[in-house]
Image 1 (cartoon, rainbow, N blue to C red):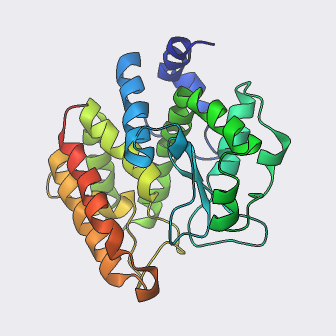
Image 2 (image 1 turned 45 degrees about the horizontal axis):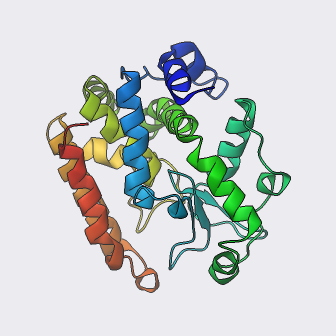
Image 3 (image 1 turned 90 degrees about the horizontal axis):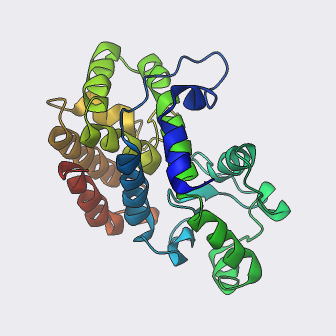
Amino acid sequence: MSLRGILKLLVSSSLLAACTVPGSAPSASPQLSPSQLQRVGQRIWQNECAGTVAGLTSWNTGEDFASLGIGHFIWYSTGKKGPFEESFPPLVSFMEARGVKMPAWAKGPCPWGSKASFEGDKNGPRQTALRTTLSKTVALQTEFIIARLQRALPKMKASSKKPSLVQAHFDMLLATPEGAFCLIDYVNFKGEGTAPTERYNGQGWGLLQVLEGMKQPTPAAFADAAKAVLSRRVQNAPAARKEQRWLAGWHNRCDGYKRKL
């Protein structure tokens, strides 16, 4: 199917409803045109991979996992399980359900056990083939991220002491293309903010914390709240993680939420 055809399907609420977790009520889908949805995918790719095909298979310094695809979806190797939600295996299942043939080795744990082994095989046949597949499925990866956003609202409201505020800020952002991009990009970037493991000193840094901290339901206010939440994360992070090195880039990404989609 062409990229245009996939993007048209993405607008269909029935397709997105099929991505929901049984028993959960999905939130409304963002009302974006096919061209806007394409820009969403391209901007996520730019934010995570500098828009490069090479960046579609990465292992960042200081991390214990591979980061793959336009969303830098997390993939742990055998015997490793970190505090962050693993998202590449669900993406593989999602894409296969949409008719994309994925290699057998991509359906289990990450076959590279360290950054060194991953980088040593960067130009090998497995990563080369995977980058080709990922570069051709940007629309499906965008759909996968939006499906995650749809599942996020019930989880966030259940975890929040301010569920009405979270709902109101979410709905008002979703009503505009720029606000919808804030939600879509950030839930992929730093998660829902509901997982107990994704905390430093008991404080999270996900979409929930940003929505709770917003002064107004606007993209600019979202950007400012996100920067504050991420600065707090860095302050609370274990010294060994050296997260200060990432903060400027994180803030720059958040400032991008103030731009037109």
